[in-house]
Amino acid sequence: MRRPTLKDVAEATGYSASTVSRALAGSPQISESTRRRIGAAARRLGYQADPIGSLLRAPRPRVLGLLCRLDQELHVVYRDHILARAEAHGLRLVTESVGPLRGAGEAIGNLHRLRCQTLIIIDPATVAQAEPALLEGAVTIGQQRPVAASDLVTSDNSGGMAQLIDHLRGLGHRRLLYIDSTPGVSADARRRAFQQAAGQAGLAFHTVAGGADVDSGLAALAPLLDLAGSLRPDPGQEPCTAVVCYNDQCAQGAIIAALRAGLRPGADLSVAGVDNSRLAASAAFDLTSIDRSPAEVARLAVELAEARVESGSPAHEPVSRTVGTTLVPRSSTGPARR
Image 1 (cartoon, rainbow, N blue to C red):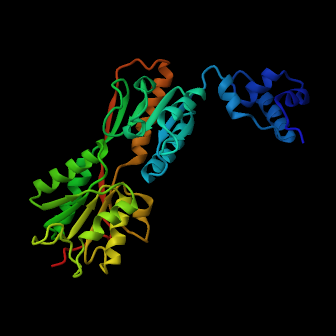
Image 2: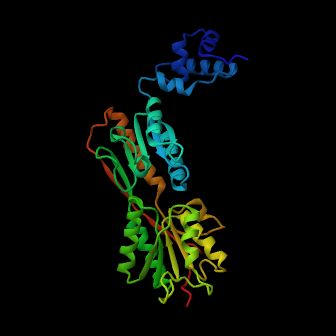
Image 3: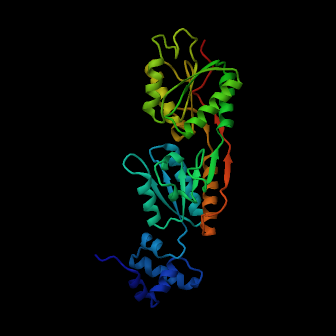
């Protein structure tokens, strides 16, 4: 069966194809009664607009491109908030996920072909291999700009981390383990925030290599748990009684390692993460975590991106915005075991 076209709607209503097109797009140049009549005919015929064609034909498409990694839960949460905020502002959002099978250059090229006027980048590492010229005028969510001429929305790691360390100290923990991520700007920022907060609180700590996924947390913690259920990164030293992980996915792996060793999270060993993910809030993990206010980050990112769309030019002074972080305590942390 042939798919109804714009011409079919025009013939059914007696209007020109251009009038039908403007009416279906909600143009204020078309009267309300005409829009209703055309809309009713389009529904009756089963006409559906071609969104890609509409984007390519529009003189000012108001389209944002989002570059992220959808294998990272925080990126998914940011994507959802950015999409909702963009729609509220009358902006379209096209998302490209970068990963082992799709490079940043290819993804950016596709976004530009779809007439995305401004890019939003989640984490500069996402576009580490891209040509700098392709990133001019972007809005970045992360700890630093991938290029000088881009706006930046940053989460302040120090506030939430200081709250977490105070929380653990109040529970009697005096020696901590920090599971790091692979080298990068985000990992460096979170590690520095942890080290500064723990140092100021007078707590001893040990840092081990890890990563940003469940397997990394499992692999990092499992070898450090002895047969008696103690966490001893260094033989002969007092055991660590709490684990702070780079992110929630890493912390979930650490919890699995503790459970396999017969330890109860929050009772025998405290575990905390960062990002306050959906799994962290689940009854299955009930993980103490640092919330990064993703809704506020998304709001600022979309507002900055819209300002660039409205200006029609990427060549303006880069803007920086900072969002605070807060601790969300749950049952995965409890009094230190003596």
